Image 1 (cartoon, rainbow, N blue to C red):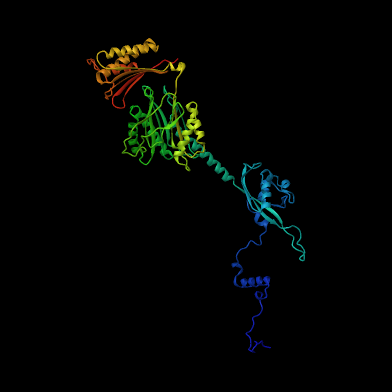
Image 2: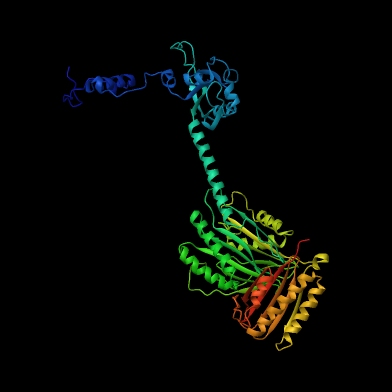
Length: 561
């Protein structure tokens, strides 16, 4: 009979029942598979790995593979690559028994963690001795949690499925080439860094000059672990007449270019220092030179001069950090202005300032790597250095080391550091007997020269010099005074100074024309004084003095012992 609706009208014909409408999932899958097989030819079917076994997949890869199960990590499987490296392993035994190499590599505790947490773990670069192989090998091992199917015949269909075992898949990928490449790179970088540091140190003074009246020491700490050279430098230059120049500078940036600029500036400073100019004039010359060398390189510098007769440190700064001075009572203060912009900017007239440096005082010059930190203001670093310097007792080299430690400077510090420490020691006892000063004001006139000779003779006799040195000293003093009387203007002064290493004779006057040594003709009545001084003395020189005038000096080296 034809089906009808409630009002007697015939219903629409019903489609034949299908898997989709009966709710049978397996039947639905079969139906979709039939439809697909009708649409795709066998050649067009996508590839599948469903038919491959674990042995087929893991057995052909070159990595080491081991599968263990249960809390004791009993061995279920090792692939051929694993057996080639470690040999065949019996299945069913615990990893401690069957896989002793994993125990030696420290993997068993890691496998316990993986089994408990269900999360994979990796250890890098484990060394496996070469044994019969030509070299040692390195592997990175990854332990991954898995489920290992139960062994034995399939269970009865009427019985619930046996739960699989929890296990761990140990996967070892060889990284020997990477490790050896990294080691070669590390060795190469170490050699490059060693060469860079050697270059840097070769540009610095190999041995500091040691002045008579100061104790000095310096240290340089290269920054970071890379192979780039820095631009920090320092120097100590004896100027003659008992005076000493102290220099520290920093060319910003790193690399050979910064080091090259640094080397040129340091050489120029030594050349300009020989002119015995005031500090600000030295910086003025350096400023022009820096612009010619490389206007893009920023360089800072402090140039200071110590004169034991004045007991002060006269200095000029081009954008550098302030000198710190500690007085005999232990109070530390910063050298105040003047300071100017970095070298190479041009258009700036530098000026000199001064700070007391009496016997018993110390000073430190440094570069920004000592006090600058990325997370702090640089003033905080300078304040920390002040506190450290206040408590840093000992010789200058010990003070350098203590400042490095106090400011936390290590081999991995990210910037170059240069420190120059100077001390003006208080001399007592026998040492004090080796340092003397004597001065005579000269008022001109015909009696000035005889008075100067008599004064020099008496002083040198009281200092117990040998007759030969006594006579040479009196002759030098007489010639310098005669030169000043003839070519200079008042006020005039004769000053004699002895240290433990030399005798210094100096004459100052109000005229700023510097004498020069010249060859006197036989008929000349004058012009031989400076030549005589230059011949009998160890060294001589002249300089302009602050406020106008000049000083002409000579030195005699004292015999050792």
